[in-house]
Length: 123
Image 1 (tube, rainbow, N blue to C red):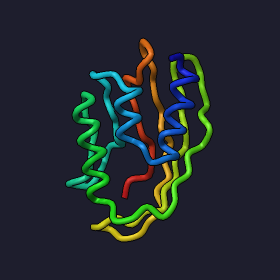
Image 2 (image 1 turned 120 degrees about the vertical axis):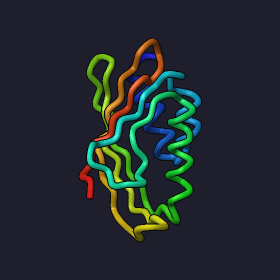
Image 3 (image 1 turned 45 degrees about the vertical axis):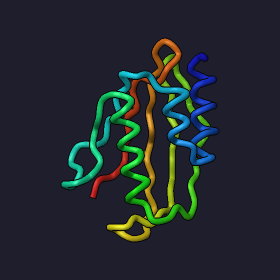
Image 4 (image 1 turned 90 degrees about the vertical axis):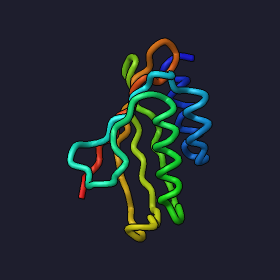
């Protein structure tokens, strides 16, 4: 798949809440996931490797009590890069209900996502 096809597939799977399937189908084994600096203690931080990315996703799901709504934008593509915005109205077990908004940036190498980086306000 090319970058545009991967971007469209990722958006489709995310909108359906199929994050694990997205990892299985679209990510490279050596992919990295980068979170912002300054996260509070115990937050899910940056990781390297598909197994670690899957584990981070599972931990996020375990910490989530309810997803009230989620919106994922259409991708913006430039060469091997694409980005989307994601907004979630969720209830976290530790923090209660909140709206989370972020910009998600992805890099594609040899037909797989090898880097994801998330930009959002910490705190």
